[in-house]
Structures are given as C-alpha cells and as structure tokens.
Image (cartoon, rainbow, N blue to C red; front, side, top):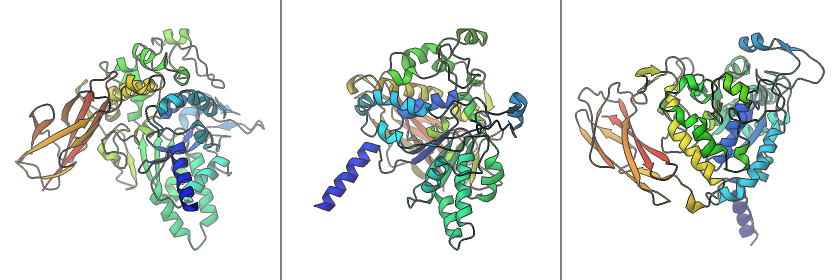
Length: 496
C-alpha cells in the first residue's frame, strides 16, 4: 500500500509541476530587459511544451544592480563602454518582475488548463526563482543562490539534456561551472564530473552579453555544447522593421498585436510591452517606447511589437515537427546554425549562414529565423486566446505525420512519393504545402516537387545527386481555424 501511495503522490506531483516524459529540461537566466519581459510572457504561454527547472535573475552588459557600495564599473564590452561610460549601476529592473508576472499568470492559469493539463502551476514556477550574479556585468567571483541552483542541476543524476537559456550575460552559469571546477578540479573524480556536465549541458546564447563565455566557459569547458545566435534573432529584436520583409511585417504591427494578443486577452498579456502602450519599466531610463511621443518619433504605431530578442532560445525547444531541438543545423523556429570549424561542440550562425529570402531575392543572414515569423505570430495569437476562451472556442494545433516515416533512402534519378496526414483536435481542415529547405540539406541544388493532391507529392531525385547527400523536404500543414495554426513534418532523403 505504501508503494501505491508513493506512486500516486509522484504522479500527482508530476501533473502539478508540468513534468512530462520526453519534454526538454530547461533553465532561464535573464537580465530583465523589456524584451526579456516580453519573451518571458510568451514563454509562459508555452510552458506546457518543456519542463522549466529554474528561473534565474542575472546581469549583462546592459543591466546590473551594483554592489550598493558606490563601486564604479566600466564595461569591457566596447559598445556599452562607449554608450554608458562608468557607472555604479545600470538600468537595473530589480528582482521582483518575474514574481509579478507569475501573479498575472496565476489569473489565467485556470483557463490555460482547459487547453492543456501540462501547464505548470504558478506555485511550482515561483519556487524556481533564484537571484544569481547581478552586481556587475560579468561578475562571477562569488557563489550566489542562482549559481548554486544551476550547479546542483548540472551535478544531478538526470542525464537528459539540460538546456540553459542565456537571455543576458553568461556570468551566473559561468559561476556555477567555476564552483564545480573549484570543488572537484583536483579531485580523483574530476574527469568523470567534467564529462558528465559537458554531456548533459546545452547552452543557447543570444549574443555575448558579457565576456564570461569567451574568457572562462569556452576555455575551461570547451566540450559543452552551445547554440549561438548572433544574427538571426534580429528579426525578433528591436531593429525588426529593417530586417523583416514588408510582406511579413503585418504580423508584428499593432493592428495584429493589439487585437489578437495584447488587448482583451487577460491580465498577463496586458503586461506585454509594446509601442505606445503607456507602460514604463521601473529602473530602466531607456524604456521610452510606451510614450506616444517616442512612438511617433520612431514612426511606429500603437501596440507595434518592440522586441523579443531572447525568445529563439525557447523556440528551439518547442516541438512543432521540425526535429530541430537537438539538430540546430536542420533549421526551425529557433533558427538554423552550423557546426563550427574550430569547435565541434559549437553551432553558430553568422555571415556564412544564410537562407535565400524569396521576398528580397537575396541570401539573408536573418532569414533562417525570419521565415517562421508568420507561423510564430499566428501561434502566439492562438495561445493568447487560450488565456480567455473555453476549449471549444479556441484553436489548437493539428498533428502531422508522414507515411513510412521521416527518413528515406533514395537513389539518384528516382521519383519518391511523400504522403502526409493530419489529425486536428478541433476537426478543422488541414491544407498541406511541401517545400524544399535546401540550406538544411547537403544536396546544393533545387529539386522538382510535383503535387499529387492535397497531401501527396512526388520528389524527383536529381541524377547528379551524390551518395550520402541529403535533401530536406518540409511538409507544412495549416489548419483553417482562427487564427490558423501551422505545424510540420520533415522528410530527410538520403542518397544511397
């Protein structure tokens, strides 16, 4: 009977916290910039898709608290040093904003549960909050509750991948690793501990927002995997009007954002920062976006998207059928990165990683992320509805599958039939589109795709395809609900 009660208790606990088999473990570190707040709000609406294990306040080159002693600090990052000079603190938003947002989340949580029982409880998420290394940019000299929390996770016996999202600086994570090195670096078990930590840890970094990855982590822990996004995230950050093609911009403009996401979608989304919304983040003097004066000066319109530069870090973890979570070179909602030639554990974007942009008809360093803007924004709008609508009145994602699986061996000159199917929880119709993702594959040319009906195509394998080359075909299924939701399957054709 004790065993039965224990099992029931564990199962109940899993339901309460949102733990589910095969969902990626992840910890968020954040410096609290206004775009972090917006990324955080959207992330809460996707918190049923992964297992959150930590919410850690950290610092960055743009935001630090100071030590309260008047100690002056100059950034070692050139841009910040030039912009702000010497400071005792910089644009610090405090260590309460996560708790405040979770209070708003608690108000929509009962309705979110109507759409998925896997949403974590507000109480569970509140228990994950820790304060990390926040005194200065790059401060990693002292242990903090945040660094100790990450350290314990890195040393636990769960060997499933632990994705550490870096929304600000890397310093709190670097301190956790330094603490492990300090404790075990000269111990007999050091090699096994080093290998354990490296095997399970995956960093997703949006730029270097302090120097601790470059100066410490990459030097002392070179075998830790990192997905490094330095270019592609710009389509989801402050300069998006200059990056996103005109045809996709309506999904980021106030007419869409205000109606479908921000207004009349519950108290959590009311906190989402947008242009001309009248909001002001305490502690950040640079946050002027909410004023109509600044909005007009920058030629924006009310409720226009400002920035969610860090959202790609968890977009990478959302399973929409693109199989990219552990394969960043495949490309997906988290962008597309290639393996570094100097470090096999590093995947990165950059000027050498481009997708063809059909809107500009040019190769584009941001388009591996930009190509998903429509799908991402429609999906966000659907989740916003989940905050206020009953299940029967909202839209939910279809589930796609490929007959005979995702991996196929093919021969040069052969025609291959691909057949997709979909189940939709709302009984909506699903329209299929098949397209080649040439940059994700290794065959360098276009292939002919011939429709055979709504859900079938024939792919002509070119006669010059070489043994071992791959061709990636994306199957896109769009339902006819409101807002429409898009999901995918990927066929990887390998030439024999």
